[in-house]
Length: 265
Image (cartoon, rainbow, N blue to C red; front, top):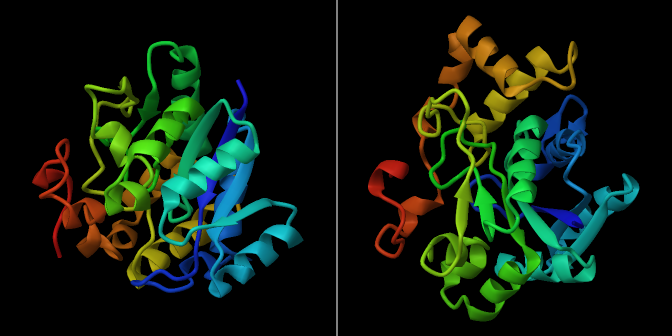
């Protein structure tokens, strides 16, 4: 199975512009995330998918300078971006990882991909998000390319195009949906936040890197949780945004998402 992992990235974030360029121990946040993803044994070909907007010229430049594959496409149609990358690289399966997850644990990535590969004739789509149990910011989705293509052809709503996969996981009567839950049996999806959308998120992520990376560049989810237990003030840095995600803007349209899976600020 030829797997292509797409990291969607752009500079024009409305809440925290240029967040993927913010420095983490001397490198852009995007490069730190790519570094963590590259530790995965199963991600296959990694491609950064950015937009054709002028503001994203810097993304292509960074990729070229660091020998990272880069594709440029629609600013708002992320479904098309993922589809075009999958088509360009002849993917059998496409992995979706957003660029706002710089603390993502490559072990979790491998766990989701491995489950999908082992059950490739049972599921069309597998993620660790439906329902989510891992701390927010460990988002992994993988689907057969033919399923991505079907969504690309049939998804019509703006949020289905912008967020790439809702057309798939919102239609469990059409698609076979698989989910990987955190093996601990815990659900930290609304109580821990490792993603970046606000300045406080950046301060949290930067602090975690500074505490853990120098001694162990391969630090794990467990390492982060142990750090937060030892130094609880770090967790408090971005706690007001725990549970905040894009679902909150589409609760009246989403069939498989309930209000307790998001928080409105």
